[in-house]
Image 1 (cartoon, rainbow, N blue to C red):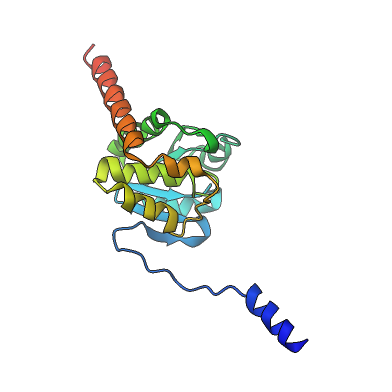
Image 2 (cartoon, rainbow, N blue to C red; image 1 turned 90 degrees about the horizontal axis):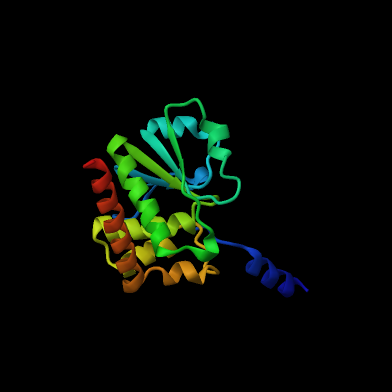
Length: 194
């Protein structure tokens, strides 16, 4: 009986060992908010609350890009009346398309002209993960393999059940995102020149 108890206890115990990551991966700022610095102008997190306002101010966040499809007014309830610009670009986790990723990336890039941007979904793992991975590939020149490794192994809480997200990180999808971004930029140039 004693041996069985020891075996069951050992199986139930989880060992929390700090993961070491390549130095160019996102840097943890606040674990309780799944809040990471991607680069000087992009941060990622889970859904934040009004209690996180000091964190946003400390990191210089000027715009929040919310990827949540459901309950997307949580940012407004928490941060309405602040100087932070709130943008909703909802993604349905199970049906994300390359043109939707391009729209989110375009929104982020435009907002970065005004300062740092925070992108988030509910957990800050899956939708946020694919957006940041595509940002790494498109804007930072990362390989697809490196961006995928960070997305899946970066301690953000990635859920491997979303096979469609994993499949979005391939040459064909990256090419579609690039083409959509070119179209969005050309469209904006035409509007600006009028």
